[in-house]
Amino acid sequence: MKKELHIFFTCLMFYTRIPCPKNIDHHPDYLNKATRYFPLIGWIVGSISFISYYIFSLFLSIEIAVIFAIITSILTTGAFHEDGFADVCDGFGGGWTKEKILIIMKDSAIGAYGAIGLVMLFLLKFKLLSESILLFSNHNLLIILLFISAHSLSRLAAISIIFTHEYSREDATSKSKPIAKNHTWKEVFGSFFFGLLPLFVLSYFDYKILFALIPVFLTRYFLVRYFQKWINGYTGDCLGATQQVCEVVFYLSTLFLWKFI
Image (spheres, rainbow, N blue to C red):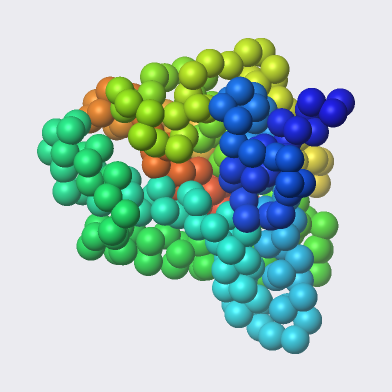
């Protein structure tokens, strides 16, 4: 149990800005095993984001509360995944070879593709979340499950890439390199358990919500194909981009299912 707590806090430290015990560091072995808890981090980020939304919704409009919820999730993770999304937009938008794409993604400066991509991403999140919440404005349990499911399922879609594909960079310059080395059934089981459980709970209220799995994992499939085509694998930025895109696809899918089916 003590070791599992250490692994969990390693995961929490790596993927969020939440304070952790002083004895926790980025030990490669624990970081590699921490993938089993990555979707569980989605539970935490989603819950914190919902709490922010709920508090601000008591005094302000739903739209403004949603903006604060998005800001809160960004602050909680330190824009970890949004940064990866922007780097992927810049890298694949401006590079035409594997080497050039990887160099651009490694650059800390943000370019036009990354900036435009982030603007579009946040606009979609804002609009989709606002409309989803309006449908269930009097059912906070459904709303918090929506937040948690979106964050956990999108993280499952991202982290599952390391179970099926190879890391693209040949060196260890990326901070995500330790999680790309190996995995056991514990990492696979933990990821899928924590990634899918909130969705199954949400489907108790409406079974149609399970169909959201299809577009989310189709998105994951086509993103991986694209990454494989251009850089023969994935990087940490690719995982971050996958998480962000799949989160938006989940909101879009659930909204469609609730409104039209």
